[in-house]
Amino acid sequence: MDYDYDTSYEKALKNIEPDSRQLLVENINNIIENGGAYDLILKLISGDKKLKWVRAIGQSNKDGQGKTQRIYGVLQDITEEQETKKTLSRINQQMKL
Picture 1 (spheres, rainbow, N blue to C red):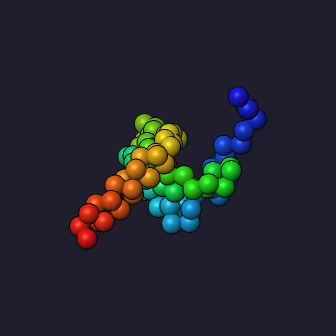
Picture 2: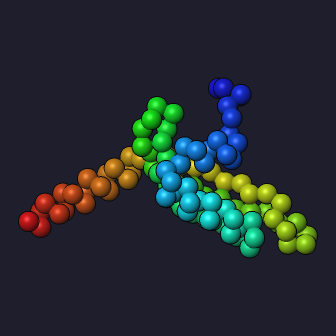
């Protein structure tokens, strides 16, 4: 495992497609201000320049005064699931014709 991998917020955002990036930033800003969580489906470009779909789940931790201290979360690669849904949708459309 490469422990020198840069997982900074700014670098991570660069790999996310613009529409998905805006959605993620809006949700992060919202939980910084208001607390809570998010559960999003986003598109990103992987290191090998392939389109990937990910599920991003994040949550905030607040201090005693209700101020957000940190945000933590996970990304789950759901590319295969999204591609399967797309294929099934296309097949269903063809069957309706």
